[in-house]
Amino acid sequence: MTVRRVTKHGERILKTPCPPVDYEALKPELPALLKDMWATMAAARGVGLAAPQIGLNLRLAVIDVRPEGKSERLVLINPEIVRADGEQNEEEGCLSIPGIYAPLRRAARVRVRALGADGRPWEAEGSGLLARAFQHEIDHLDGKLFVDRLPFELKLKVLDAIKDAKPRWT
Ligand code: NI
Image (cartoon, rainbow, N blue to C red):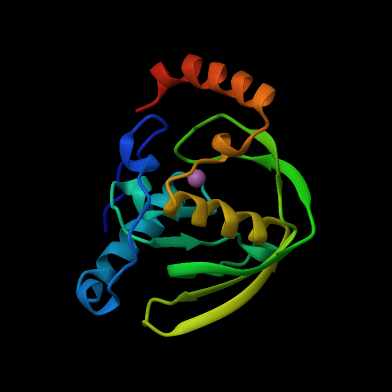
């Protein structure tokens, strides 16, 4: 198990849409890869991590928003949002943009379909932080970061803050 370096805003991989995972082809490496992803997410104190954040162009993400403080690990392979409704406007951050947070409008409830670690399809509905995590991680797989979705004025401010913060990132 290895804590991997998390890629940062400005690195090309974070702007590159990920092609679907061929589950059978990835299967032999998947257990070790997931261990690394969980370890990397935990070390950075995140609630989600997408493969491009450890430099891999794979449609794969992990989420654990710890509902009621209890771990609830979700593995999302080739995830899709099948339904989204309502609206929430909360602060959002990203392990690839450390220290930067901004309010962002997202759907309040989303239903996601994906393959799990065992290759079987699952579907789940999330609201609040889980709904936000679903949308945030799937955005990563489409080559998008939360700052890309901010309204123009706020985006300019946040990009300035990123420029200032960048020299401190590793
Ligand atoms: Ni992120």
